[in-house]
Figure 1: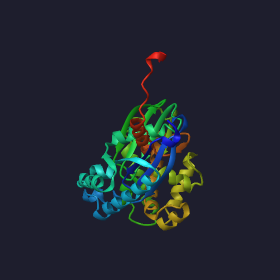
Figure 2: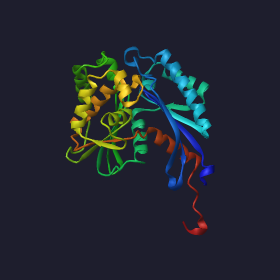
Figure 3: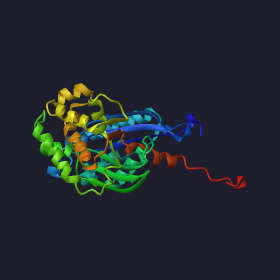
Figure 4: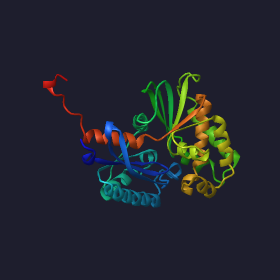
Length: 314
């Protein structure tokens, strides 16, 4: 299929912190060619743990964001708009009502997925850009949950969703802005407790790969670009800086919205807890694979593999 006629797909991830979109088509060699995208820190999951419901104002903001993303995706040639909703939507009492509105009003085909499905989807997408040889622990840190995947040479051995996220911890343990060192330490301790029972590979052999917005913004804070490798010492230094920076100051420093900066200290504390548990020689930071996995699935449906030609003996 020529590049000019290749179908264009938009994929959106409705997370507890942000609504993110990627628009892409298939390019030469089957690689994805990204045409555009966007991210909006809706914080849909804020308060869900306390109330059991998605906040009405945040729902409206999510709908507005999805409508805008739909227009932008179609302007880029997208003919299919697909997506998933994760932890906040799947646990909220009004999550199904929110998804019904999304379907009726925005043009997106969205499904709420389980934590295990989220982990598998993220891992598939991550494999496009990341070397997954050897023993790997992949931590996809979201706002309301963290998906931990253990794999060997690209084959998943186990995948689990943990009710542990940067937004969730911030709502519960970080009342002050800037956060205190004690609050950041409490986040790290809570994360360590949550992941203590994970069945992990031999620490001396395992690689730790962190994906998601937390990893991306941590990389910015330490002055690197994705994909990147950071040391545990660098993470410790980042946590010290985060404990004294207000969300507004942090937002200006690494050029992200203040609402997203507000939950970053808790997210980096989760990274540090995983480092304690896995004991890697270094921490690898990669792009989130959820939207890539969605795009691959949708393009596989639109561009099925050709049937073998019996005359050629394939």
